[in-house]
Image (cartoon, rainbow over all chains, first blue to last red; front, top):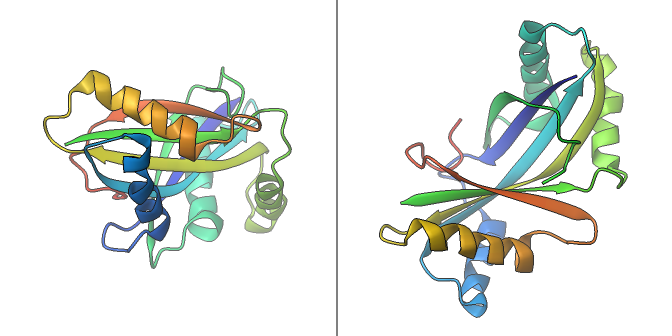
Length: 90
Length: 90
């Protein structure tokens, strides 16, 4: 099985209210020194055995363009990763 | 500046309705061979210069435990990354 991770983040010049909210809460946790917090989406796509590597990233890009990222305010990156750990395991 | 990325995903045995919705839409895009889609959060924490590396990951873990992940249904991973690219750039 081939796993591709699509990371979708707001473009740098777009305000991130969620990130600002988390940043504002950090002093209450005693966490110092954080200049900036940005929050985005991580999507794991697991492809069946036998789907060839080149087409896996191409198809993932197609999905990201069409469904996962809003090109007006978001950027995305695509990376093939080891899929030994079950999805979501830390 | 040191950047730490916290990836928060649902535990493997938790149903992911968002992921199922994306998976269901893939055939309409002509995308074949995707067995599983999981959607989670990616949080970038940018620490100021001078904050020492050991405490950066420790503080990021503290933030993830307290604010970013629900330990009942979510797992998280923490990774220090290069921060040359501006936050969110692909």
